[in-house]
Length: 112
Image (cartoon, rainbow, N blue to C red; front, side, top):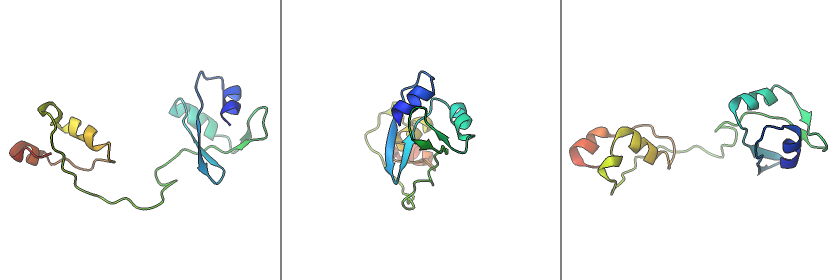
């Protein structure tokens, strides 16, 4: 599949296909515009192969195997330079989607 995309779409892009099982693959596109361009086709065959492709934009729900739970996380040992709102969101995003940061606790109790 990767070779087929490389031969058909000369976009100076290194194509990688991650096998997700059941004949589906996750493929990163160079831009959202390129993804939209290809997803306009209902289905196509990769040049020089027998591979039939249907492109759909990936969503979190598309591959969901269960519901994630919301949790509060306490982080210790962060330097003062990392205790701003945006920095804390960056730290939290390593675990998942950040819904809230308790900035009052950071300011008043030095707890992140």
